[in-house]
Length: 162
Image 1 (cartoon, rainbow, N blue to C red):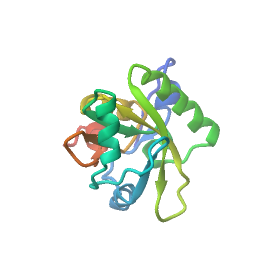
Image 2: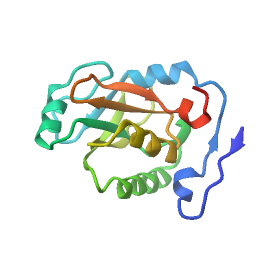
Image 3: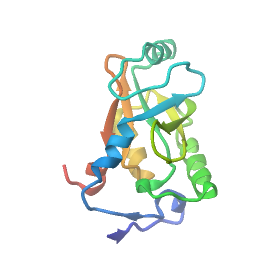
Image 4: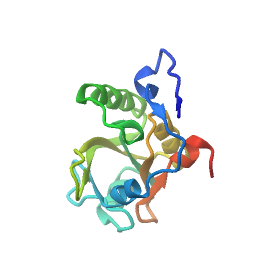
């Protein structure tokens, strides 16, 4: 395990250790079995399930892509509510150029607390992965107007093991 060094400008984004070992498959099963709730939309986003309401939102905002991202609990390590809120506030400052809605990722089973998140319309897959890397997120949800939501494992990008 190596410590990811934080620069002084973005210490809240990167002050957690990066574990380069193979990710726990149970984590990704949990991510796939999470409801991604977007405040303002009636139907939650689920991995692999078409969501017409999301597509309508994209059309109404002249967008074709979207991502669901949080800054909470980097590398699936639970931080304090204060630390997480500070990290998410920083994330929100970085997405101001996009159309976005607040939301939360809510586990269907287990005792993991809901994680406040952002549904970001108009963001590219590459830019969403860059944001995930900045906040040491193991995965994000990404979709397009022509595709179903998919779980993107960003750990492969973080460790350059593709």
